[in-house]
Image (cartoon, rainbow, N blue to C red; front, top):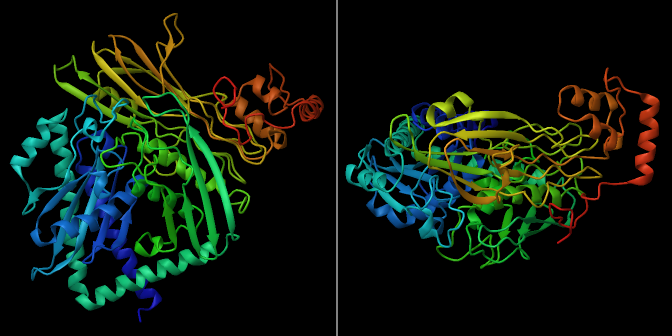
Length: 595
């Protein structure tokens, strides 16, 4: 029997390994997407391919590692040698959120050549080939059109990159030099993880190490089941719509039913739209990751993430639906689905545990990629990033402004770094006033970024959402603002592009991304007027919205609160407009119509 203190020490030893792997990957990567935005994750597995530790810099990648490693081991175990590394992004192997997410898996051997486990990391490369730069084609109708598909090929031998395989990979992607640097960083992360785990193996004998791992996973399962028993038993439902699939501009329903029975939970997506012809589909492993990350946010944050965590949960994703598409279906838009799945998990439980959930977040990854020829050096360039938006209002706090919520957790790309790497000028980068969902606790604000390209043939691709169906509020809270995607904004030549679109920009044109705000929590008329005033002072909320929505009347010159006028205005709003007309269950289009 392992003592509590011993188990805690062992748990942090494992966690220290995956975190050191993450630091290694981050500090040695070439691309901004990994070294600055932290779009990566690292994990450890035991000799039976059970998941035992996770570093979740980018939580969306967690499930891909968990599902890819056992499958690869089953296929290649007899062929594995010390110092090997296998590259995989094939969704049919459980190994992709989308194809630019490349997983490198290495077996770990003791000094006596005994197989003792597996180490892996998942890093988002900014290009994987395909028709458009950045690996997010908006009109792909099969997986083949989205770039290179890697089913678990040996890229590393004896801790060295295989030169022939590297030549094949780099010939099929843009920005080859940077891709090689990122592969080297992934190799280094696995090598340090293997070395540290081997040290741990030497400290414990094989049987003791196995006992500790079993005990840790059982401890995690016990903690998770205890947390689940705090949620009332019952059947809970939620539903939302995506803008379209990139081919057809028709709403796509995501339906979720959650069945809780003591410490067992079933997440059932029956009723979700059929598989799409375009790239807005998601593999079940990615959906499972979204569910786990959302439910984990309700628990104590010291519960380890390992195989024990997953045991109480069952996932039902109907075959042929957009959350379980057929073989070789396009999946570039997976992020748009799983972001919404995480929100729906919390929405479904709102009545059961109102003091633990939040209103809708921005609800979209906002994938943006651009590429062309850099006039500064004549070299081909490609860049990918996701954009921040509003966090949902919370039971006791406002939603955070300009964040990457839930599964993303990626960092901001600094203006200086972008302008150094890409031939563009950032002309505007700010919080988007009035984008929050009003509430007793308002949602977070989205952002606006305007980008001027001085490349004369820049390709600008958006694979995003939330331009038609706004992030919902809870308990009387209002919806957040819709997203807007525009070319040459605030000029006579301004026009709006679809949330899934590719535009060839002329030299000097400006592309503008305006991201959604988070939904509000509670009635806006219950918001403390001093907080409304502070938001006006900070230019987060306009004078007009303060008066018309929150019912707070401020002097236009001094911005002091007129308390008597505020009381009258709030009574007037309560009589005329008892609730936000956008906060019900009916999906509404950008023009206010219902679908």
